[in-house]
Image (cartoon, rainbow, N blue to C red):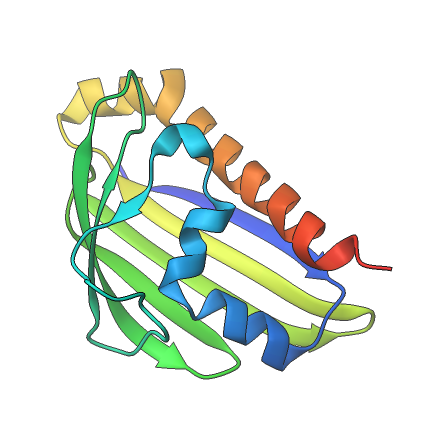
Length: 155
């Protein structure tokens, strides 16, 4: 079964500033909860800007300190508008994450749309209903809070 999470946030900034931040893979660690131990592992130097076809390898610890390798590919990029990342290897059977930004009255609207599927059939669906969906929502709530701190709390 395919699951969907969609988030929406108003950011008091401009397209160039938000795109610059969101299109830098290294900034993902800033907006990911510390307990996830998010670490990019495939690059010796900081990743500056994403591009279509880019492969990003990292470790995450989603639960109980369990360290998982996750590999994503940036499949689509349209500067100052959107990008898509898809899992190539990791904990999900399917992971497709679209990130959109657009100018609206009062700032920038940022929309994330995530489609995902867990392995193990019934057990995966049960895990989703018991904790995976909740944890994903908490991660995006954390991101919302961090984005507010970074961009909406400025005087």
